[in-house]
Length: 269
Image 1 (cartoon, rainbow, N blue to C red):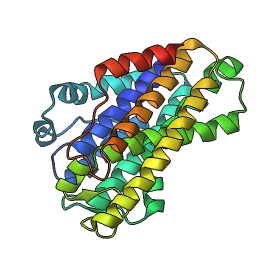
Image 2: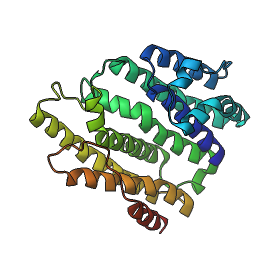
Image 3: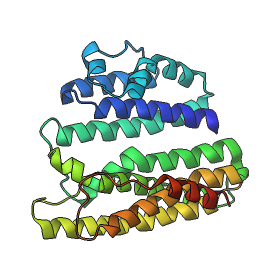
């Protein structure tokens, strides 16, 4: 599974870097369209100088500079793996485009719960589906003895849990930037906001628990570790957010490194 998973990850990180950089929404749209076409086999002309200047993190700039190499790696994958990567990237980029349309340069508010569910499916739930389809395609029963359709549904919930945790731990920073990913008509209404925040904490916790059940269905220690570790870290992040009580974190909470190592150990066994 490694080759397709790595190439899919690099493609997703590339489009995510484009969508999240500090440039104007119109330029991001144009760059995402160009990259989406290249992922589907079209030509790739590279990024504009203005886009590259707006990417301040050195590692992300290096990734963008090597996007052509990532696309060449994609073309070396066998057809069935290439199709899976292209399918998941089409869904991810559709979510990133929708995000730009919704928040643009001026910010905004997620309109309703259905919209948030759709967003976390597009940018992360589809990755759970990709991982599951890839595993069964490459390994068959060596991937899991579970029913494929049942495991696919669990994988999707697991994927949405990881993105939902990202939304919840970033909520303070997003509010300062004028964005509210939680569907609250008036984010300044503290009572309404905290009620919605608590609801999605519950959802994230349940679905991260689905992640542990997903991991338990894997055949093989490395597969179980790869699935269980992010599920455990998501649950620990939810616990840290709950520990804040009625105070929405002003900055992103982070699981301590010692807890990460302990989670790795528990996941391995």
